Length: 170
Image (cartoon, rainbow, N blue to C red; front, side, top):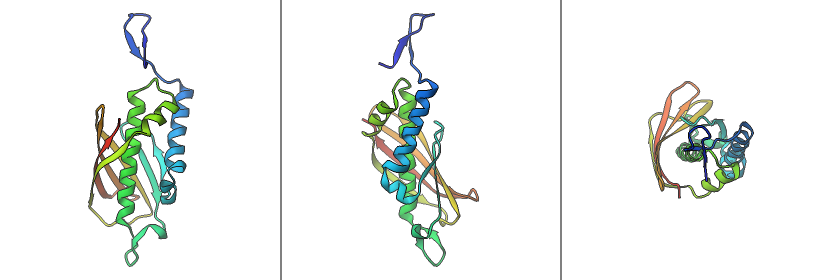
């Protein structure tokens, strides 16, 4: 279980990962989201932040991600995929935070049960820029369903798109 008795009070308290275990967990999430999920690798997604209040993925504009060649804009599917993926990353980070006694392997096992149920994307501005950052924020992490909000900004700080997603977590 994730609880240990507190020597001073005798009450159970949550176990926490050591610095080494936390580093292993973060390395596992980076490997998973940057390399093991090959579609993310194809898109060029890289983990920019694993902060629990807003994990981030970043990617650079490339010719093969363009949907509108006249105006050199990101394809809408790339925008949607980035938002969905950062939602999944935010769920993984939230699960790791919710279960602080879990090893990297246990966090990965929990993430393997995560799946997108619903995704809504609002395209607010043309996807123009050199670099893009997607941020995911968990609104609610329940026992079975997680609700998230996501954003995609370009290197000028312009909000390109927002997303709302529901993910199964059990």
